[in-house]
Image (cartoon, rainbow, N blue to C red; front, side, top):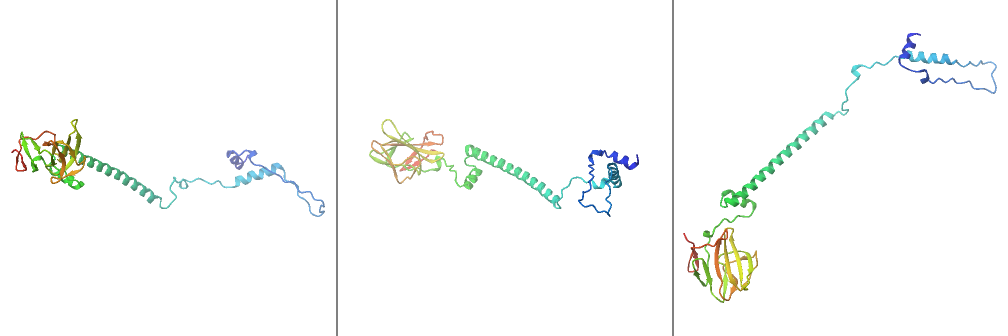
Length: 253
């Protein structure tokens, strides 16, 4: 066995994988007497020619330089990948900034609640409420000068209105509540500030409902037997020790 034949066997090419077809000569109706027809090749002869042909072809060698790692085939792949990485970093940075903003907002809200509850007159409270668009009214009863008409002071903490007369609010304000008692009379609470309100009892008629604004120069109701007015602080406690001069209330110093 020669070297070429041995090389063919090393490739593990079985004989059955090479289909050898020997074409039979066509039969002619009229044979030419002059031309001699070639006899077909023998099976073994054709097989030998095929093996020689395979052995004669050079084997392509796989060189290391031809083996390249898988790479992006686009020219701008590197720039695109870099852009994607930068975008991911930017998104991550944005999420971090948004988180910090939420934390700051939460701290400010807690600070506003704290100052409203404990420090209503603080500068930050006035600043924040002014920027939000609604000013917080931090006035106490001592910041007001109530006016009471047509009555007398009773026990230094209750003002009695005249009978069969219109009743006025001592200060401008907003009606907080209106309720009718079992005896048929009406009680109204008027809020002048978050820290100061007035209570009117014994009314037979009241002209407003909760949420309405009332003024000192416009009657709020009418009393047949005479109504009474007293004042309360932010906790609802009745304010005592005040006097009246003419129609103006004087707070105790």
